[in-house]
Image (cartoon, rainbow, N blue to C red; front, top):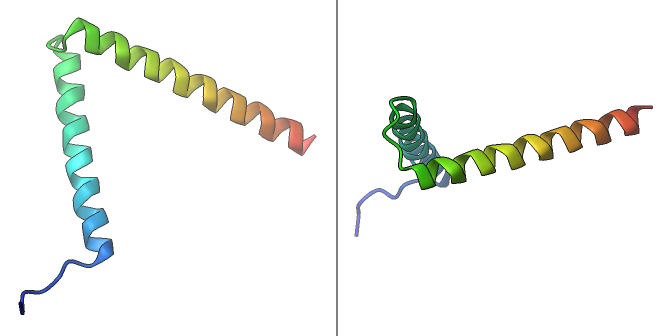
Length: 66
């Protein structure tokens, strides 16, 4: 009952650390060619979608600035 509780900020820090470690492992496996081909295709699709979203956001920012 008297154990200290984790703060919300510490929970976010811990979750971010775990996510960063998982991404690092994934990136190392991907660079070594150890990733399952189906997962590689999914990652490429996600990356393509992210690039498209970023390009759209940049285009919108340029339109707003003009």
